[in-house]
Amino acid sequence: MPLARPLLLTGCLLLAACSPTTPLFVAQISAQEAVENKVLKTNRMTAAIEEEGDLFTYSAQAIRDAKSAPAEELYLTGYRDRQLSEEVRAISLYQIGLIYMSRYNDQRDDTRALNYFYQVRNEFPQSRAAERSAVRIELIRQRAQEPVQKTARELLANWQPNQNLDLTQASFDPDMTLLSRRAVLKSRVPEAEELYLLAVNDRGVQPDIKQKALYQLALMYLAANNPQADRDKAIGYLRRLLAEYPDGELADKAARHLDQALNQNR
Image (cartoon, rainbow, N blue to C red; front, side):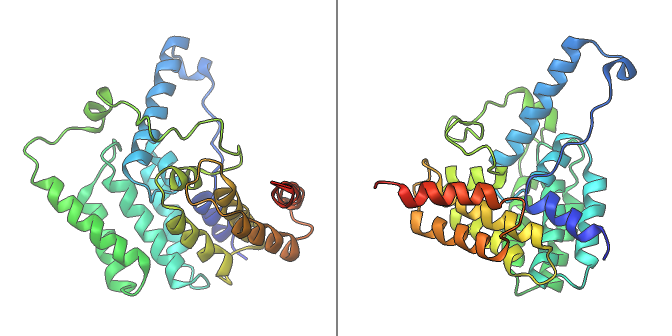
């Protein structure tokens, strides 16, 4: 089985691992410059996620690290994989479009983004990604009419974090992905749930990805700051995870969360 499919979905639907950074003595930059660069990159990713809630973590990291082209190529491997459902393949193209249309991406390319959004609509017209692509197409058209077109760096120079969208707040379970956290804070849990269930129900998706998706579903519905919290729903997802993947890597964590949820308010 090709490596591309598990790599794609691990990086896209869930948390992608950060690549090793270049050692300072090789990069030949000062410690202060390194700190400033780290802050800029963190702000870039946060700003991109604040503006576009459909960005997967891997997509946001590609914007942060100026790696739009490698991310594009990886997503295309998912699009070309006919063993994945049309919904998942459509999402792969949709994510490329989101990367290139981000105003905080130094490699922004609205024309390229539009091409991918149109491709989603033409090839997968019945998919949810097609509906969302139509909205992004209109947004790009509206932006083109703005009299002043600022660069990503110009926008970041005056950017301030949204106080209502603190993705790092301590109340979140540390295992929650950026997609899950933003969904909770923006009251978009049902939409995120739909995305995770695409992975759970797709026969082409690997078992380790399915259990991670179930785990994220449970964490979202258990989140204390989720106005749509649903303990029973979370318990259902945890029980499904444990029933279908009893020896999985998340079994212990799922069992612990399930025990806490069952004993809540007793």
